[in-house]
Image (cartoon, rainbow, N blue to C red; front, side, top):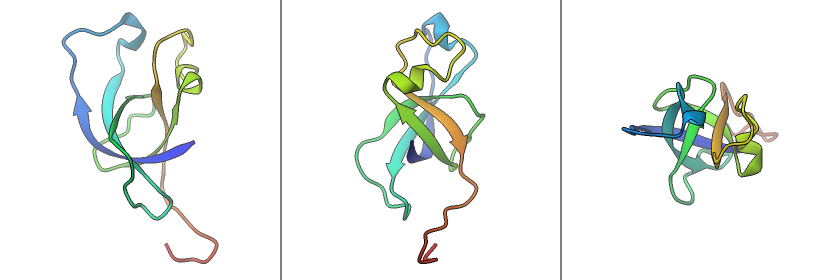
Length: 92
């Protein structure tokens, strides 16, 4: 699992039926200290996340398995909303 911050929505006039009823959100990958890294990506939302939320997401084949029809072309899926991040040294 990876951490990301929801930074926007993606609106499609047409999409595959695999994704009917799902929101597509724009994520910025972050590390455990909430620092941004890498490029933003699009993920389908399975947990009703919103803009500004810190989320857990999965990519690749595992992302596709979060939908009822696991045989789909999805490459990133939001699978949880993070309430808190605690590091062992207590810095956050």
